[in-house]
Figure 1 (cartoon, each protein chain N blue to C red):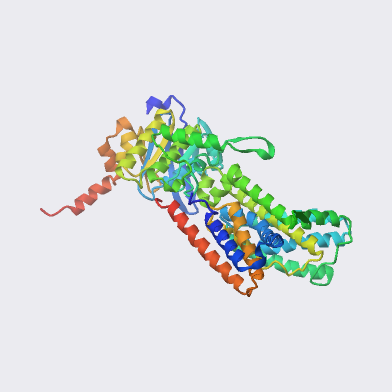
Figure 2: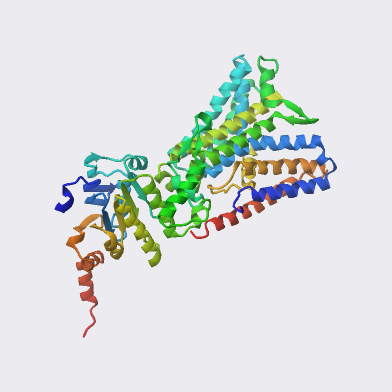
Length: 325
Length: 264
């Protein structure tokens, strides 16, 4: 029971919830719930594939800016080609997945640490986002595409708000829940899930029994790219214009959510549900501080403390698991 | 040798060589593995034992000599291909993923599945039950097949790996120093499963530097020294004393004894 990866973060989440329920007047209101869930979902959608990748033993530092790249490609392609926005959305999916596959293939070919490979992609994408946007639009943000065909339907899919029992829930929460369910299904019940645990836990052993290591890791990077595509489209269709410099630093927040949720930073252990709890902790803390009218400067302090606590707990769990090794 | 030459060997290496750049790791090594027999490969550290394993397991390609499976000359492209041809290798330290549950380890790389299309999933119940049953057959009674395999003892982990190979219908079992890191009692347990695998009709390649362990179970003995073959014997052509002597350095040891002799 103690080896459940999300247990520690769940205890933490309950503690944080109780803390803000007492300290912040508005925290328990239904409208606040919607706000907290929304903040959690934008992190959580990415935390699921990032957690799977971490269980598979790798990092993706390009995940944050890839979200922006995905939104930019979608917007600019639609605008420049004056096509239906759905064409842009589709092209964006292909481009984003290609970047993910690039990360995976580079990792396999160069055998460099993923930290270096994706740091390279991160910097290149940051430059491309700014450079290409300025080249195409003349400014650092994209042109509005709100009057284009297909915008309303795309917005409904990626950025609409549903009302459930008086609470406004953003559609991203549904995407998030679906991804958590899908991630859990893959990890716990499919062959691919077995391979993910194995390549992260002991890559050589996995290779020796015939697990396709390169294919598994490339698929994980494409998974992160898929998450980035959803987040990117949400960004585009909720704000209509995209700032090309956004997204930098978010990659660490996704990683933090996964680690707080019980993923071992060295791979081989973790869960999709844990990443969701990590994202929820993030959402509760960031919004709870606002509701409690505390100085938001404290947010990062809490985040750091939670990260340390979670990592200590995880390390302790792993020592127990490998005690007789 | 004439006793078994009439049958085709499961694995037959003749004059196999392997170079890493300018380094000669293996030169002109020959050995045979027959069904229901144990071929022991003995050698000191750096004698080329692990290179030999990697060639049989499909991790490395040999660059000289021939490798024949069931009499058919071949060159193994990957560990997957070796597995598909019935060669299962239990590596000394990379046999298992410590953090994964026993049942996930047992089926790793060959997971049974049920369902169709997007609902295709691992048959988890079957996997848990089979793991438990197969381990029980080898005399390991696990309370919980969900525990991480890293919590098992070294001997138990070797046995899980052997049970796995037997379950998946391997014809040839390659064991890399299965008793190296174990105590006397655990070594005995592992040797029992090695002979159990032999009795099930598998051909076994048993790599070791311990002639006592080798002589307990072995039918053929191949001695490696600095990448070359220093001797090849069948059980009836060599005694344990002679094997131990050759393993310990043979004539070199005699010279050494002479040098170290106390003045009387």
